Image (cartoon, rainbow, N blue to C red; front, side):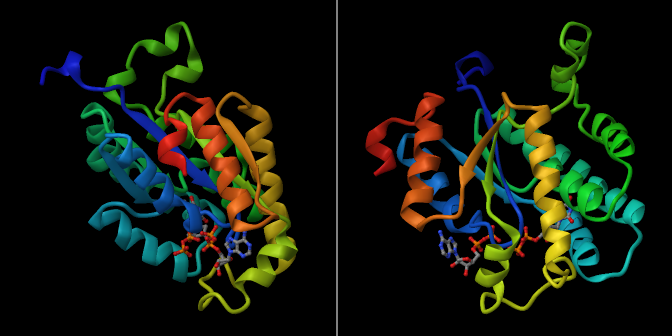
Length: 231
Ligand SMILES: Nc1ncnc2c1ncn2[C@@H]1O[C@H](COP(=O)(O)OP(=O)(O)O)[C@@H](O)[C@H]1O
Ligand SMILES: Cc1cn([C@H]2C[C@H](O)[C@@H](COP(=O)(O)OP(=O)(O)O)O2)c(=O)[nH]c1=O
């Protein structure tokens, strides 16, 4: 199959505070794309490559200042982009990542208070990829790799905290107080406001099936999936 015969790759990210419900729907989303005949690369951040997974362990468990956290997160992202995401998109895969750069803005920016403009500089540096070189002249936002769609599971921090009390042993971030997650949620809202064409907000404060129906409606509205595979 020549390059021109490959399907157009799709880059889809799931975002939201810990406990918002991302993991509960990401595999079902991947399977819906597989059932529609697409190859899927299902991945996560921080992580997705052996090196990025080592950096994940440091990020989730070692004490760091916000700049250090941001640099570790973006270092993991660069390896993830180069080793996994870009090759998968070039093959025409549907890449579904549990978290991406919006999480860095939400957690290190809004949650930890790190400078938003400096995060934008890191975003421009790390997400510049050969496939998009030269596109920035006409459309600056097209100059770097960004998700085609970000599904944002929006949930009040207090509800997320209730869901997590028995769910799992908390990592460094999950052990943060409620006010931290309220700030993180605000960070996601700020990113969504700045890029409304890229974000689809899901009201995650409802039943699993009602959340799934919202996800299915978004994917169907994009024309990426037909109703039959979303049952
Ligand atoms: N719609 C929902 N209503 C109630 N509990 C939920 C819902 N969705 C997920 N959960 C539960 O909340 C916890 C966190 O869900 P998870 O999908 O792991 O969230 P995330 O991946 O965003 O951290 C899990 O125990 C999960 O079973
Ligand atoms: C991608 C990313 C994640 N994080 C945080 C958010 C989460 O608390 C944590 C990743 O954990 P999470 O995605 O919730 O995985 P799990 O379901 O295994 O807990 O890392 C950042 O602080 N910055 C980032 O750039």
